[in-house]
Length: 279
Image (cartoon, rainbow, N blue to C red; front, side, top):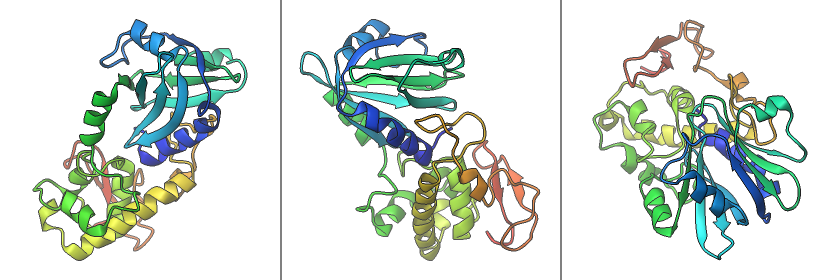
């Protein structure tokens, strides 16, 4: 599933075409990705809407809209496992059309497309109250300059669940999924199965810095691509070339040479770690 770096990369890739544009026409091919909004209401809202800003919150892209009647709406796109936010300056090819669930034409030419091969993503259209509820239900952004190490520790430490599971809880800290949790815990030297409340403060301080460093490095590399993820302009990411543990189970640790182990016992997703480096 796209995590913070992938969604941030997609948002940056589509922002230049969307911000300041008006949507002149919108089409939706399937309704199973809609949450809390009907197809007619969504298309009516999008048609004629002016895009003020394009941002990211957690693992979601957000279009800040001013509708034709002057009302404000927040169009939230959750890519899920196979979703992509894309822009095209010309017409789509037959291959590009195949999984284009939402297409929105722009007054400046070109179009914005939400492409989702397996249709696991979701689309939400929120008014101000809905946006406030959505925003406040999520934890702080890990790359927010205002997030201190003390606040980071306070968000994670009180819980008895495994530190990896707590780190991926979007109510505690947003944007970190399986890939970057594996990587950050490895670099911080923390056993991913250790209960969060038992992790020492010095280890938490290392984790705070590693989460921020790795997420920023992944953004700089335009995300991690194994299968479906693409940037806003359709290119694959490059951070998969820098992964130290994720998807490397059975291979030697690049730090100490120990064979990397893997388990599904922590949160039913694969956790790859080094017995020596993460004692």
